[in-house]
Image 1 (spheres, rainbow, N blue to C red):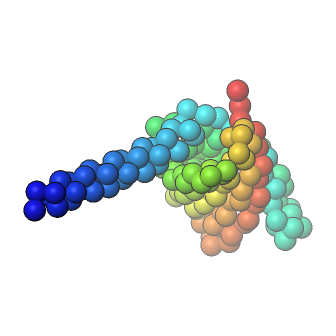
Image 2 (tube, one colour):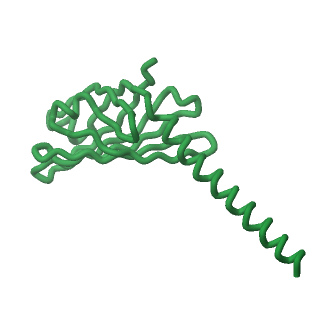
Image 3 (cartoon, rainbow, N blue to C red):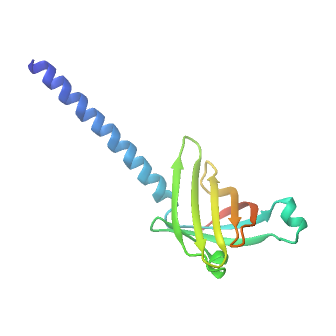
Length: 142
């Protein structure tokens, strides 16, 4: 009985330690982006390019679990929370920013294995319901 209790206690402690490691890993993935800035160039898809949309550059700043976009802020998009996921050789992030005048912009990005370049897409649903899709790529600002 005593051996069973010791074995059960050891199993519970190892499970708690493993879960704490996973939680710390998740926190580290956020902290790898927090405090960084990125310059990106976004290009509309061909359909919107034909309608007169054009490329734009933007600077993304990750701080305090939020992401802000300099050009997006000019269009009255507020900073918003981002989520990130870390895999063996890649980190991804998502963010949704809202503007009462301009609509909603959903960003999905990927970082390369060196964590110094990013690429992804932006789905901007304008206030009138039209959706513009952009792809983007960028570099970390040192």
